[in-house]
Amino acid sequence: MRRALALAGLAMLAAPGAALADPALAGTWLTPAGGVVEIAACGEALCGSLIDAEALRDDPDLRDGNNRDPALRSRPLRGVDVLSGFTGGPETWRGGALYDPESGSEAGRGRLTLADADTLEVRGCIAPMLCRTQTWTRQR
Image (cartoon, rainbow, N blue to C red):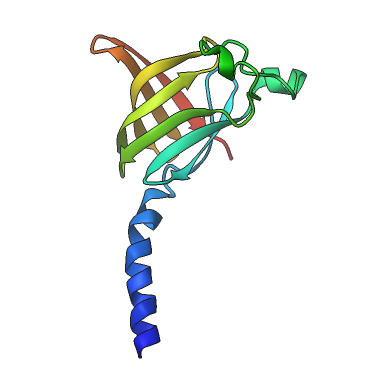
């Protein structure tokens, strides 16, 4: 009986984490530039890592050479977090940071909006009126 109660308690503690890995958003997404980003739960939020891009097909060892931080320029570009710290859902996640590997800079705070099961609007703002939105497509 005690074991059943302990397992039930652990299941209740695990439930919030399960909700974070919302299957509606988790998965791989194709960016307009041809990059592939994998979105998954990371801690208490959602993150997205660059897992493929046209440049990586030409040079699998490509580094994050455009990064504004010289200490990060030698890290491999494959696996770099381009989305981090997004919370919310089930249709909109906010408050996360965006990283643009092409410019090597943070693209400000963002918002992820699931327009439909296969369409994700990724919006980044560096100031209230300076925003850019991209439409990503679910990769099947």
